[in-house]
Length: 254
Ligand code: PEP
Image (cartoon, rainbow, N blue to C red; front, side, top):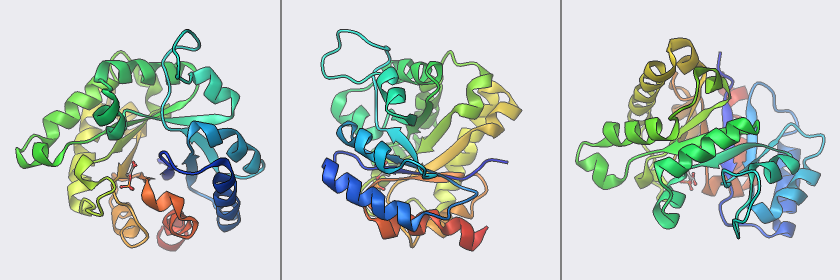
């Protein structure tokens, strides 16, 4: 049985003071959470203050990116060792904004996924097609390429600690959410690919999240789909009431 997982991606928002205020409010709103894993991914600069503010809370910390080496001469980069040192348990990898604006390739994303697993960070591997790719009928091959590229050379035992996020690029930050049926079709495809890659049992253990304009008014329909194990939330994760409502789908509906 896969435990639902709700992840907030704060992107390049929130100064340290804003981050503390946001997470204090979230902490109060989510004091009673049970039966769901909740993760917030602040920008690197706010991770430490958020970690301090979250002490004793059930909300878990993640990061939005990292380098694949533990340390080294990589100016401007942050390593998995540094993230675990700050108390991170998850790391978002291969987000479409990183692929689009920073030239991240499946090869480098795979290095990061393998490094995350080595350092006991749960990778959240993001995959998803652009609008043009969907229009051309290429959703499945694009998703398959990113998935197999990102998970190359990873043994099935890693399945349980790995998260995949299906984030259609056309749905991110646009207000155009995939319908629950569109998302469920791709999630089922991802689940099948994972089964082929790692065997059925390991494939079934992986949590597959949906991301792309998730909001309080569409969370319930998305989470009603059996292969949608949670969501990766961008914009709405900066609004504590909206994010708390997204997390609370669980109590109301399951
Ligand atoms: C994201 O950044 O991963 C995302 C899904 O953003 P939004 O919820 O704003 O579409």
